[in-house]
Amino acid sequence: MVTRLGGCLCGGVRFEVAGEPRLVGHCHCKDCQKSSGAGHLSFAFFAEDDCTIVGETAAYDVGSNAGGTMSRLFCPRCGSRLFARSSGRPGLIGVVLGAFDEPDAFVPSVSLFVSRRRPWDALADATTLFEEDLRRA
Ligand SMILES: [Zn+2]
Ligand SMILES: [Zn+2]
Image (tube, rainbow, N blue to C red; front, side):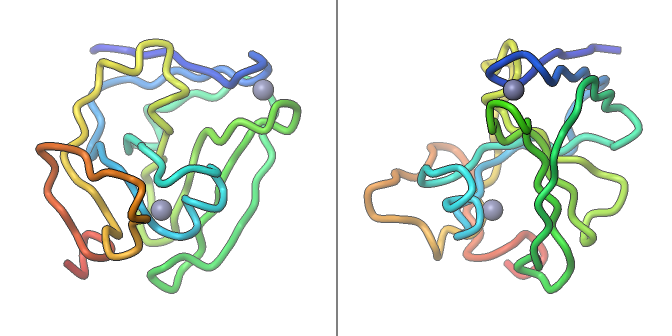
């Protein structure tokens, strides 16, 4: 089984994921814009059991767009956004693509919350567009 490594900017948090992601895409929702400081965040969802995290993370929980809880995990030292867990997607963990040591290994297939996209943030090519979240598209 393929394993992939990654970590935060300062190296205080490292992770390893095994197997292929369940979903790879971009999220243009307002919370991803705020927490990343960019137009969207790019992520891969893996089975939580297949993800091993080494090092201390901090978390910030907010109500999710779907009415549940979204927990965003980051490095408390350098602030890098790393992981997300959603009560609406139990058993899965989202890992930001930019944190991987080899981020080019992934091919995003979906763009979520394109209704909130900023005009200066171009849509990715060859992705299926969803106005909101997957299930409400
Ligand atoms: Zn760090
Ligand atoms: Zn988002």
